[in-house]
Image 1: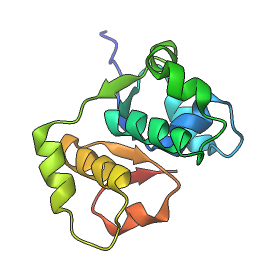
Image 2 (image 1 turned 180 degrees about the vertical axis):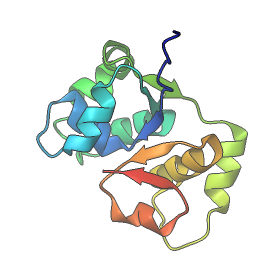
Image 3 (image 1 turned 180 degrees about the horizontal axis):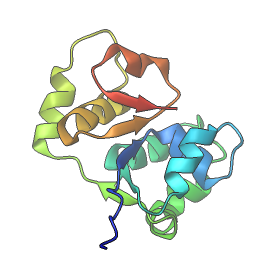
Length: 136
């Protein structure tokens, strides 16, 4: 009898979920924690999250994110996460999204989630305005 390998699921982390995972913050939900630590799942982090962390750290909006701003590639590698690069298709889709949500980082994650058919891990209720699969 052949064993059936469980199909891996693919998840895209919102920036706050990424930071809460990296720094063991109790605000990370149990379902989010479980999917991130499951070795069969593919956990993706958008390049937009690196941009957001560096920008907000520089502006003083994420004062405790210095380690992430300085060492994000190695932190992602240690956490077995994959970087999702921003493509032209992602950029055009993010720029074309309807609705009032103006945050460019979130708009990019929504576009990437839609185009790449990913479940987005976020606690942000603004994502509920868009046709994407969410987990929290």
